[in-house]
Image (cartoon, rainbow, N blue to C red; front, side):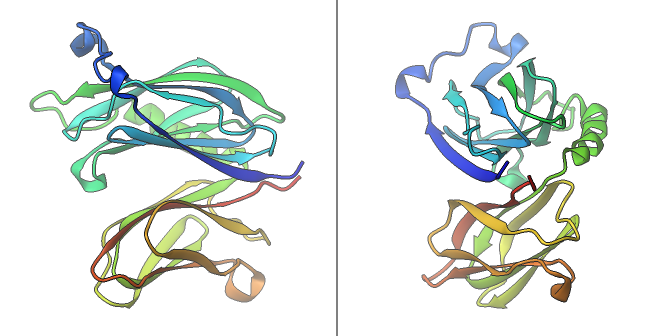
Length: 253
């Protein structure tokens, strides 16, 4: 089975902006609904009133059906997720905060062989005074993060503001960002999911979500470079440009 990655963006419809129920404070505001088949890994990100899905696995799986019901508020709060179907693990990878420009990321990992169908609902709960912003299931999320590594695939997510040229080096479970030219990168966040980058020959690919310049793989991981993927971000326009992308590789047949 050959692997591939797919990305799909979904914007909120104006007619859906007021769908929050009167009891939203108690039950949370529904942000989105997603259903689809998962072969290896699905990553769902929402920022404001737009969301996107990145999938790794069988080319026949696709990205499923994503329906945005309400924009993610640009204020402190907690995102929750309810799994209504599927045998794998769903984890909140990122809670919205000022440090990530109020972006929430949910990850679905299917560890078993073959493909399974999933359905989930994502909700938002406003911050309670005196309570730190974070998942109400932090302990469970940490356990699930360890379990996700059994899925046999990894992913690097990068977001940040770049001026001129920046190099990202991904090796194993770590990613290092180096400024090559121009002003130093700012608001940078790099998150490695799953098993990271393995110590074997794989071909990494860029799934670009945002960025006015080029994002390219400068070196593929190999024994010669210690199985390190080197990605260069080139922003030739004046000032800073914002970049958001995933670096993925396909699971071996």
